[in-house]
Image (cartoon, rainbow, N blue to C red; front, top):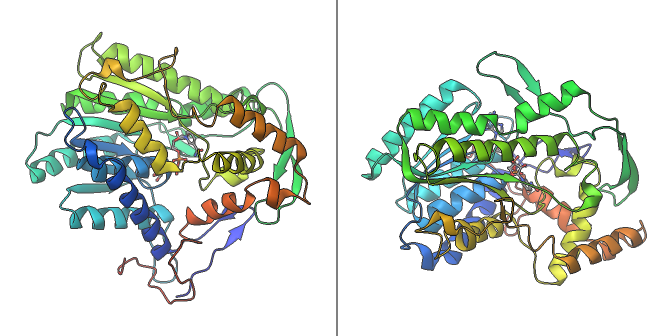
Length: 414
Ligand SMILES: NC(=O)c1ccc[n+]([C@@H]2O[C@H](COP(=O)([O-])OP(=O)(O)OC[C@H]3O[C@@H](n4cnc5c(N)ncnc54)[C@H](O)[C@@H]3O)[C@@H](O)[C@H]2O)c1
């Protein structure tokens, strides 16, 4: 079948198997090269669990662990497989490619598809970790847990209640300029303030409770190494985005993620039971993912930001960000053997959004946002780069792929 992008209201509803596979292979090559000198550094991870492993930051984390440090990886995600007539989700092809390349490189990898919020998947993950470790001939002790879930819904495993997250402001309505990446047209996006119920539901879905449940479950199953590190990801961004992000429902959920991080450290870290070495929240850079195009102001801000960062030679995608997180933060030469040496800000968070938040980068980004019009949007901003990254996240617009070719949607010939 010939597969071309199908985009409806800034959402891409299909994906291209060969394009997804090529994008994964590009990330693998990058991680192999960028971490080549770090493989043997004592203290780097050998058995890694990635929750949310199939796309974006989680996929990059798994690639860095496996192809950078030669770790055994167990990955968890929720994706739709392909059928005879319809492609699967991008993460489905990404996982297939990851497992294929890992096997070729002699690396043990296991991928579980299911609901990470459920108790049953947590138990299955522990079983799979033991099996993968036995296959690789190493101790069944995870030394890195990456929590990189992004989900619109969560079923509470204790009560069975289904919660839905929303991206809304709190207190007052939001109205701001937004950009349509497909047409280059500006419009005003507005959102009504969230109700208390919506705020609570967003915290349930995107907050830190499930991360805590994961660490508790893994500790109870005795599959955590005492040197284990765990990291979850957040975003802060510039003030301009705060009404809809940091000070909105999602920001409340991210505050809860930081609360969970403190809780995990005090319960399981060296000052608690000593079952793990530590938990960190890492503040990452804004990137284009499958959902970015529908968040008000984000496509406009990111298009201006990318233009500035590319001009200054500071631009990074998921894999560059995560390689830097590993190389220079979590497993820097000083921190690899000593978790207290992981560089953090005064709130205890890892910062890899430092380049995005640099004063000169923010100043020029804001200037561009103030001067951009429909007449100059293709030169003043990187709307083309935003659109490319969005398409690439679905396997389209990837260099070297001929989209006129007939392709088997099953992913059998990846
Ligand atoms: N994208 C950004 O710009 C950005 C910036 C900073 C921080 N972050 C944070 O990084 C984290 C990951 O974001 P992303 O953009 O890489 O997300 P993404 O949408 O690319 O990936 C989400 C992952 O979660 C998995 N998933 C979703 N629901 C699941 C479920 N019920 N069970 C199992 N797996 C499930 C998906 O399969 C996928 O692997 C989030 O916490 C996000 O807030 C994102």
